[in-house]
Image 1: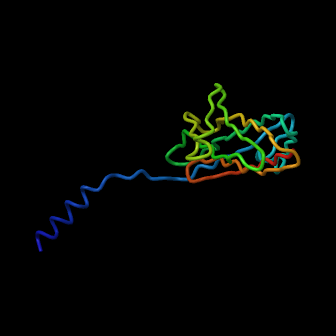
Image 2 (image 1 turned 90 degrees about the vertical axis):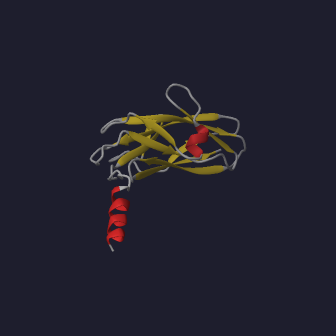
Image 3 (image 1 turned 135 degrees about the vertical axis):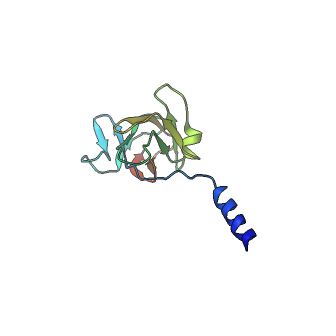
Amino acid sequence: MIACVALAALSTTALPAHARWGFTPVDTWARSGDRIVGQRGGETGPLRVWTPAGSTRRVIWSIQNLGGGTPKLHQVTFHGCNDANGFRFRYVTPAGYDVTWPVTHDGYVAESVSAGEKAWLRVVITSTVRDRSRTCALHGEGMSATDTVQVWAHS
């Protein structure tokens, strides 16, 4: 009996400490020219982008850390869609680095995004076929929170 109590006490004290995860909301939106879709209080989506075959268009995709969670969130994650139906999607950082693979697979994490701040990527959309369309869902993630904006590309 004493051995069971001692074993239970040792196993309880040997457990690693777990961080307490909270909820921090994020806001994500897309901008093309003077149109902004998805920003809180703004126009709802999808953002329509006319991309004639053989041309390229650029969309700015932003995620804002709205704050309020515990522990405080200091990063946001970009999850975007792959190429399909005659459209190529490339994701580029403000510094010019192509981060397409992380965005379309595990998510691209932007560090040092404190409460009230935002991070952004350039989405480069290239059309390769005429008379096609593609809806792309762009997911901005924070701590247990996701916000989505859609881009509808058509050629």
